[in-house]
Image (cartoon, rainbow, N blue to C red; front, top):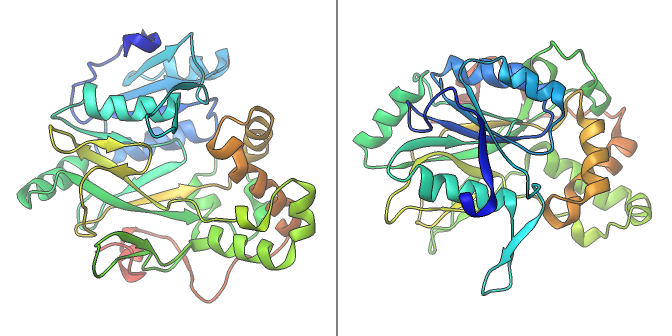
Length: 324
């Protein structure tokens, strides 16, 4: 990745040791200790963290971790467009990094690519990444399909809990599944459950068009984001990562893992402010603009409904028809 000026600031492990985990972070001071503890608990010992416009305090937090290597670029930020495809699609730095890590640097090796608010949950009874990889390889499957399950607090205002409180404690609820099915003819993955964000979007569409309009958001903008990823995979000449959410092969829903996705947390208001001011994320950070309206409109509303479940272990996701 020398063509975009990526440099190694701190190298604690070779990118090829164990099962490396790659993550792009920007001042994730709340998530970092919980993120590292979670992934260490499932056997990750090699963290390759790309720093995007991070302050000195956050960099120092990372440098104190003996299993964390740091990379960055002095030339580009996350939302910068590096080039445009022949189809006219702009490719931003975040998109490019995730593809390049998987399709070039980690070619032929199992590795994980996740965001700081994404916590991988393995299908029980497995509790270690190496065990799960062996399970997948026995079945000739070189990737893990993972529904992204939004976890949430009882009320959006409850996001402002103490920073020492872990995400699974601060946002313990999730919506029952299943979240996906395959189209009977094309075998394309179809979203059939949008989780709590889908419910929030539907509420805004029905009740808050005036507030959305003041923020420059149209009803047609209230589309559910792609709610699955391939967080763990082994690329080769035929299997490639494509953008943030896809691979280039027909895929199944067999042997799924799950991503616990935490959108509501103590530093969210700072994240919303930065995202909206800089417009670096998808469609000029439109998802963050919508989320800001939701916070204003629904801050005190009870998010629980008849299909809400409280998480205690991966077995709960099996009961909820998300895993297994």
